Image (cartoon, rainbow, N blue to C red):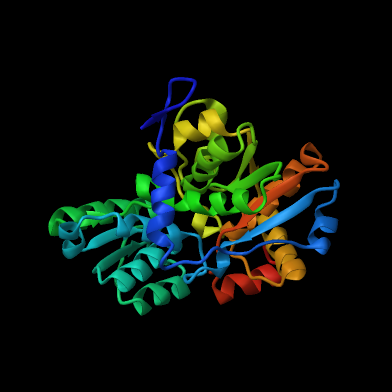
Length: 331
């Protein structure tokens, strides 16, 4: 691992980010980075909002990058034995898609009651779906068990340097396209997007502040950041299921702790309002996790006055029932 100035370890280095980009480039094209005058006006404070449309990836999520980065890095003998992942949806979709693309058998573990449309998508890519556990964290334990039983490769959604390097490629595209970006606001579940952004910023734009936002109903990383030590939550009951984790992760927590400019939480209502705002101003559909960065930007507000701020519409895989609740303002 690369060292940071404070002496802490850094989970991924610049070379690994460039190697990840080279591995995924034959399969994925850069996603759009767009500015919308109506969104700028709604956010206010003279902020230019630049939206990175990761919802335009093949699985409608940035997780296509990280999964493909991890699977293409596996040696041939590991590919033949198959891969296993735990997911609330988007990581599972990414691993299932990448597995189908590369001919690697994939098993995806999701919690009982998981987003039914994400489950359907995972099966549609030909992966085996295992529904077990009350939430994502319990599905991780199920995946660990299956890995031991089958001698398969675990593709963890956060604790994998190739996953983090793959996630970093989206921030690499942002800063290569718009080098005058003043700051970034990134949603955090496990933290791969944010650590990816920090890694790229350190190389291409030293001193660029990266802010994080997390659902207040799944606030383990936020609480840990402010406490300066790892904490867990008893539950993670947020409609932003891509952020629904009760714990922090070994490969991302220290980098988040030493690297972030600030970390805020956003309420369910604030995420829902950001989702509606993205739909109205960009005419792109976001899921809860995909709207949390915008919710965080609005929460930070005047702190970023007059700045050019990049946010990530990280995914658009919201199920119909939840979308209806959001649009009817029942969230």
